[in-house]
Length: 427
Ligand code: SF4
Ligand code: SF4
Image (cartoon, rainbow, N blue to C red; front, side):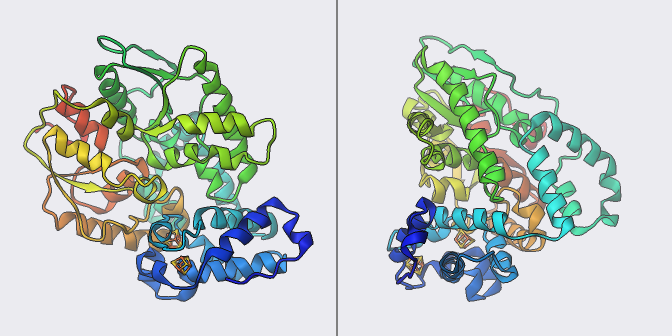
């Protein structure tokens, strides 16, 4: 694609990077076939290629974002199916990140929208605040029908009652037997409040496999939630805090930083890019990003020799952030098979479920259509249970599907001696 940025514009490193990305696009349109919003809406401006044109024009003109550009970029899920499909290697992820930051800087949203985004950015990444908000939300859940659409959508994502498992506090969980690895676990923010069973299962599984698991006291939200809203400086602040927290562990030897929410893992692996223009932090972020692993990568490296799964058929839902963001399409699925489960794949496995960070709150109508479509595909597999590696997908699918939904590590933990996942009931 031809571009016409001026020399002055190209002095900005972000514009320079986006120009390089834009120039790789050859307009072939292969990406449209796998884009969930184009599949649903059939509007070129809601396809990757259409968005690339809109972003190019916005950046070249150097003007504030228009309402039209904002509408079509807001509808993008950042699912990255287009990146997997593109034969020319267009880095749409960093291009749309740049566009979202430009929108955040130059576009004034209506007051209600600004308030909602502010509320999400100031509660979800903070487990204490989010736990309070979730408790208040449960109280008003019976009145949800009277609330505006987006608040109703947010309330619908909360579990009816808080779980009994405590959140993963900071501390050291020693390896069972001879230690094989020492890792830091990203306990996360929303996940640890909504579904603390996932961290509990991860710690049991890893320590059983001979891994010492450390939850660093000062590590927190990875920054992805605010980053997807274009709030780049808040995301950078989260990244710096986490880099410093995990550096403090490296003196004792650290083999990996483990994420069990794949949206967070994708963000950790991108820390070097996020802090690339910060001379003091760039090399530090690079070292930490190089240690980031999805939990499935660690378990696969250790093996599952003693696993013995109950006779269950599992529909594996590949989260976009795992299959497209981290290109880990098969490891989690292979682990479930190796553990002894019968694993089936839904059709349209490449299409997003509509969760996408805060998308199912900010774009509830589109998210509902994608959620219902995904749930129907999963139900058609006639599996007993759905497994996914990202809490956002789990919550979204559970809301639409009539099937129990669990995290992949909960099934692996169960197959290696852990408890039956709570979502499966008493059995
Ligand atoms: S990230 Fe997903 S929704 Fe956005 S343009 Fe690419 S395929 Fe479409
Ligand atoms: S597939 Fe790649 S090169 Fe083709 S239009 Fe889409 S982004 Fe551009």
